[in-house]
Image (cartoon, rainbow, N blue to C red; front, side, top):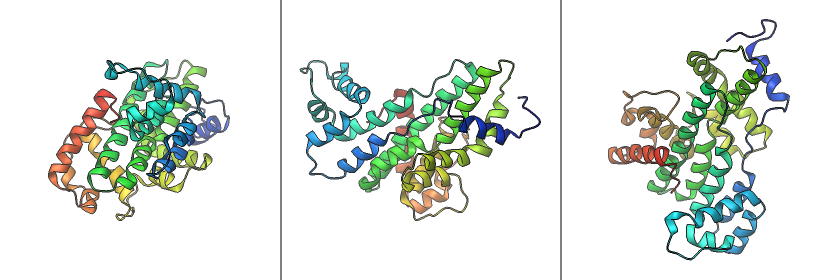
Length: 283
């Protein structure tokens, strides 16, 4: 890819990001509010429905899911309260978060669109896998955080693709290669992802995952981070990542040791990851 020699690639990217002309993904702040409410077992459903109703598009999606073909034979639901009762609050949360993000993983450029699709599958697999893993390990209190952190951990890659998409639209002669895109991801996605999370004023529990999911000097006692890092690497083994490593041995990962995970749990985790990515499953 040819760039302006008077400016570094880093400078070019920073200018595009700062221009505010990009259609950047919006962190689902409604999801943060809903997550806090779901942590309270005594929270009335009508209060949860009130939060969902703040966003018409999200409320419509929840109603759509509650009346999908899966529930054919049951009477149609007309209210958000009834939809929550049918789907369950955890399922509503998953649809809320992922439904608001998937729309950003699209491009008219074939190369970029291919990476968008890989990245979306990876994000969804990491989210579902992390939530499942934390639940199985008896850390249900972190399950929703695991889903959201897993979905957003590679937000820097999505941001970089958005910049590339904008640049290609302006300069049709730009040729993108896999080598260039992967090097770009490796060198810049953590920095720009973390910066974006801070720009959004997102709680540290999520922004720290974005910052630390590849760091060598990580905290092995951070259960949420260990779960995200574990699932993130296992996605490589099963081919649900921008980097594939079929020879990866999950049992040898230091994160697996830190979590004291058994082999059977790792085998089940691979199946969960594959199922989530294959079927866009959020259950």
